[in-house]
Image (cartoon, rainbow, N blue to C red):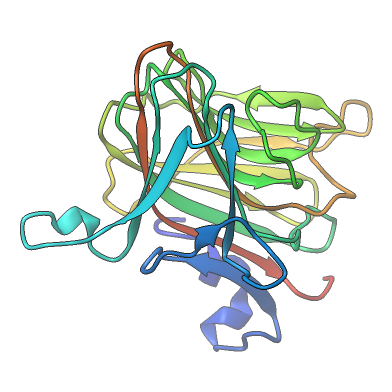
Length: 251
């Protein structure tokens, strides 16, 4: 695998057999699509404050000739300078699951201004307004905590398993991360550590009948969370896009 597993692991996409073979969520953040979800106004992402109201702000970055890296749609998620405050973004509803016979692929690209003081999670989670400090029960994705070390975490019924990719994230650097549920028993982890579009297979987690950390039997939704891990430091994370696709019919 170099750039992505989509065409390899979902052959129907190669022949444009969508939505027959797979369904997907994709947001390139070209226009604002977040807010408090109500019956009258539905948004792509439900935005929830963590801590005091207004402790996290989300906005689109506009690409210009001087800032080509922000072209193609980028959101900026910023916290204020209060520890453990920030914001949570989840796609309303829960449509993805890690079940046998249903391969799934998730990919995103992000940029953390200060890795030592930022709490960050991106991946799939059950519906929960606080992922990092809120005791979420089921999730799978990439997580950054105060030490600045990127980990990959799977959690099922509050039993958690983490693996640390052979990679050191830096301040203010773009990173691509992806994971593939093979539809059998394994989550494979991929990192593009120099933002050149080339993925490396950096690890995997396998479901176990005795110590199962892979969140099966639950439906999850694309999730982004950013919180401030320091007491007097406003933090910012940029997210370029979020993609999640799953095989529609059981193989």
